[in-house]
Length: 455
Image (cartoon, rainbow, N blue to C red; front, side, top):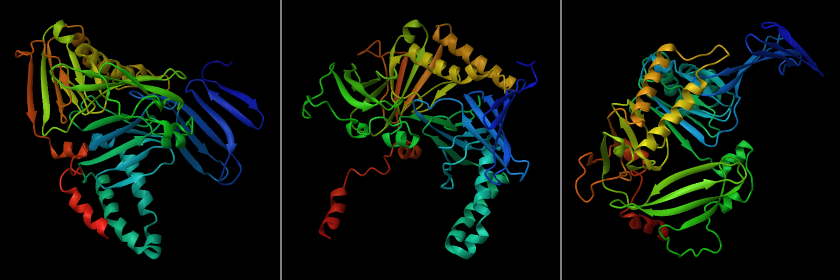
């Protein structure tokens, strides 16, 4: 092997590979699909802060000068898909880094347009908007002749995209949805409220088939069906474990989902779901609450003063947001799913998940790194979180659940617990929309069906 900084050439049948040990870049002689002469493809491995490893690909042909750039994920397909949503409010948000895999869908939610699946990108929010604008506007002259109606419909959309690029279209909302979990919009320590949201979700069998990782073709038919020996009319008994055949979201092979109903005193019945795959070792657990949709949401505030408060049972449903001003932390609905644990356990899970996404990828050898001021902010954040978990500082946490399905253990029940404050609140229009309650019709739907039946 040569000294650092030299290029190492490996002769293979039909191609040449060069590796630069300083930059970790590899060059491969490859066929140009434009002129069919030999060009050069360069590969560069990057470790992205807050995210994971990616591979930058750059092709250039010296004969016809054709160029092409793309990215590929250097990680395996994640256990869950991920959807990121960002409210873009200023220039700083326009410069946020965006990683798009070739199976992801980028949407400008405010305009109702999307960039479909295609070539992967390492760019910024502005870069994606610019590419959408160029793609739509470049063929307008042709559309005006061949499809005038489509041309006229796209004119206001292109104008709005241009206003965004001219920094006159704030605010607007974008989203990035990737079933592989390998796309990403960069967060910042200053994100608060609903500005930046991430939701992890289980892929459907159809999505696994599109990604080429589907297992048993009958898994979709079996998913969610009860075992043959179980009577469909049998009442679910609290404390009894039931097993349902399903499909593993990680390897797509057959597995079982175990469910158990638990009665929580002074609250309601909940069902704990646990998935275990014997093939790949995948494990996950989640909590679901039942009952009707309440008229109002519920906000529970807990003052944590000692280790006794840290050991309280806590149920955070998948529709619940959690925040603490003292810890400067906010967990959006759907981020951790439903969890039935203790206050200490929930904070530990928040810390471990964030720490794994940030500091495990913060030090890079490929020339990319986290900004020093951001790193200091994250270090202060984790220091406060560690102090809270160990009981060294007092803090207040609030659970805000529009479905009123969350719970904090009351140690003084049926008497009043002075550490807990509970209040009901009216759901906002945005919460009603996200929960699908605005489209739900529970009264008068029978009358609407009669005319259709008579026709």
